[in-house]
Image 1 (spheres, one colour):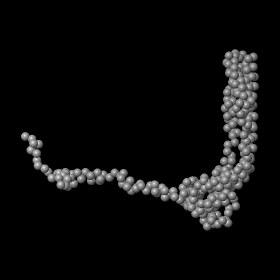
Image 2 (cartoon, helix red, strand yellow):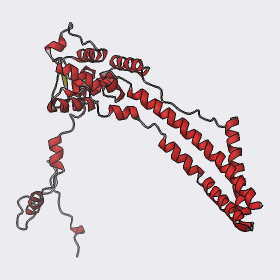
Image 3 (cartoon, one colour):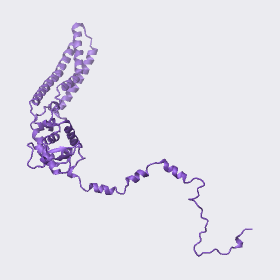
Image 4 (cartoon, one colour):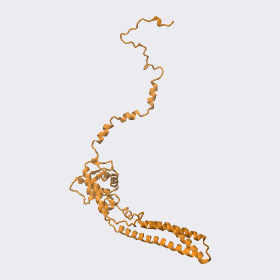
Length: 327
């Protein structure tokens, strides 16, 4: 009789645990399908798609480059053309218009797109406003309610896990000590063992459900292969120059660089003679041989002994004292 009771109890507990996992799977799968449907129905404005990839500055510069407002050299320096200096020529979209105004503030000094993107406050404000405006159009990622620590639901969950663990240990011990008789009891013992194994794998089943119903990044997957039309219109050389200018954050600062910085650096380094330093710290074997040749034997031209007395003018030697001479 005991094997039948164990089989019924373990089967009921396993059914409850896997029923909860199945309901969670269904709910998460429904939320995932709804979110993917919303992302698939979105229609992105070109600069919105570029902003989601943090490439809106490069797209705005590409549009200005195609319209003839600026030119980018091989080192990434941006200079305005005659069309770009014309105050009556303003792009329609606010992002290239703000970038053009930032370039005009630095004109005629060369400046990089990366420098403006990082250090120009007015252009950064326009970028932030555009992102906030477009952010409201994006669908909200569905998320299950988070169980707060210390809440009633969290406490009930902990108690349930403890009870499940106690029941599993007790059922496993009773299964070992029980003596089944007959085919029915042996079958009930097999059902009990199968139920205990399923309960042992319940945590792995829950992790598999979470992994299969994860939304991932469908928005990033959709935008990864898209490019702004202005960037697509550039040739390979222009695209390379544009990427170099966007990646440069400190080489071409425009008029933000102080005029007297170079002069002060030159004055500070004026005491240091690079030619002298390079000559002083250069080892030349010829100098060593030249020093040895000056000390060759027989050459006394430079080392003549001075045997003359060191008498001052007007001091004549007096008479010799015989008492100081030895015997």
